[in-house]
Length: 430
Ligand SMILES: *[C@@H]1O[C@H](CO)[C@@H](O)[C@H](O)[C@H]1NC(C)=O
Ligand SMILES: *[C@@H]1O[C@H](CO)[C@@H](O)[C@H](O)[C@H]1NC(C)=O
Ligand SMILES: *[C@@H]1O[C@H](CO)[C@@H](O)[C@H](O)[C@H]1NC(C)=O
Ligand SMILES: *[C@@H]1O[C@H](CO)[C@@H](O)[C@H](O)[C@H]1NC(C)=O
Ligand SMILES: *[C@@H]1O[C@H](CO)[C@@H](O)[C@H](O)[C@H]1NC(C)=O
Ligand SMILES: *[C@@H]1O[C@H](CO)[C@@H](O)[C@H](O)[C@H]1NC(C)=O
Ligand SMILES: *[C@@H]1O[C@H](CO)[C@@H](O)[C@H](O)[C@H]1NC(C)=O
Ligand SMILES: *[C@@H]1O[C@H](CO)[C@@H](O)[C@H](O)[C@H]1NC(C)=O
Ligand SMILES: *[C@@H]1O[C@H](CO)[C@@H](O)[C@H](O)[C@H]1NC(C)=O
Image 1 (cartoon, rainbow, N blue to C red):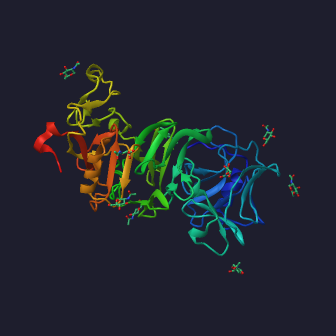
Image 2: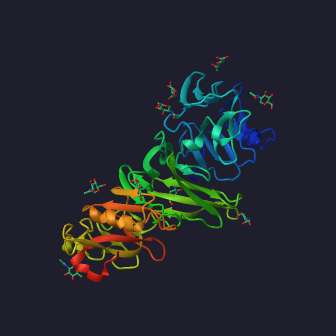
Image 3: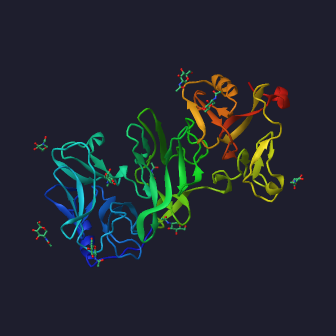
């Protein structure tokens, strides 16, 4: 977010301080960070200090880009506990706990640290990650606390977005309420694991847009979240963790993902050094068909057609009049009713974004044939596909209505949809 900053009279000192060669990236328990000071990461990329957002006079402890003229905050500590004067002080206790105090006494914010640490130091890393670690141990696995675990509205390269399956700990983004108030708004972005995991953008409880499942190559409905000359992407999904992470192949590029409360979107910005501005490089949802469930149950959103909302092959609108007047909420139903006992089959539809995974089930090792057989035996299984298109292995099944299918052109994945066997005859896929 590009925001005007309210500068205290301390600003001049701050600028001198951060330009001075004795700027430091570390504090230890004998030191503290007051309202007029900043910590600067060793290569000068990021600063930690106190700021006032927008037209607010409140003071927040936060991290921003240090070497660009537009103040861009990427993390806020005391999001819900603003400080109303300049007496804020950040300290690190000998236990490794961080405490943000006002008026010398009241703690408005503090951290929960688990493991213990001999000689704790607080360090702002060049990645923008603020970490508590032992003075002599810089192994990331040993950090006792890190700001990347508590994202605000911004994702940075190297930050995990996802869930620790051992503890249930969930790292997700939440928007600022508005430009003057960094307290959590109602837009969130994180990995959800109800069925096969996917990334979900929510407005309150409502799903705005989902990524589609991870199919080994990328998210099946988000062709943009793929490796490029500038970005690398990874999705880690094992028995311990499920998370999405991106990193920069070119370290001199500055890039951030941010939730935009007013646009109801997740945006990716990249810094343009020539124009000295942030350039929008990616936006989610990206177009009409990116809105979750746009065409209702069993619809297929195809942005190359008019209207974009179509029924899946072998389906018809449930409420034709409403459908014709662009009310797609009723979705579509089978033209020929299913008959599970007498025999159903499947048709293949190509290059689609898979349905939302809320009512799905997966198995990472089953092959496509086993997947089909299992789906066929279960009368409420309505579709199946591979879990991993790179190896052709794995199985995902959907139960009940198929929601959020989107027609893609070359990307996407084939989906096998249950239909009445009598209707389709030889067209059935086995
Ligand atoms: C949200 O989008 C608006 C309009 O594009 C833009 O002016 C504003 O800077 C964005 N806010 C954030 C937090 O990026
Ligand atoms: C500032 O906040 C403190 C608590 O942190 C409160 O006691 C005090 O009344 C507030 N002052 C103003 C002017 O709001
Ligand atoms: C803050 O606390 C320290 C130690 O408890 C004390 O020496 C100092 O005078 C206090 N400062 C203010 C402004 O109250
Ligand atoms: C610390 O833990 C408590 C209780 O689990 C929780 O309410 C609080 O939000 C945590 N604080 C931080 C900064 O994570
Ligand atoms: C940490 O390193 C410093 C200097 O390298 C050394 O003096 C100190 O004993 C070390 N502390 C521990 C706990 O190993
Ligand atoms: C890395 O990015 C910088 C800034 O955009 C550019 O000048 C440079 O050529 C890039 N380097 C590579 C190897 O792509
Ligand atoms: C809906 O539109 C289609 C195509 O224009 C037309 O064939 C059909 O009769 C219409 N149905 C109703 C109920 O209006
Ligand atoms: C997945 O399928 C394999 C057979 O391909 C089976 O051995 C395994 O138990 C299944 N796992 C689950 C969780 O159902
Ligand atoms: C079909 O699958 C659903 C969802 O996993 C399950 O609840 C149900 O028991 C299955 N039915 C049969 C007959 O296997």
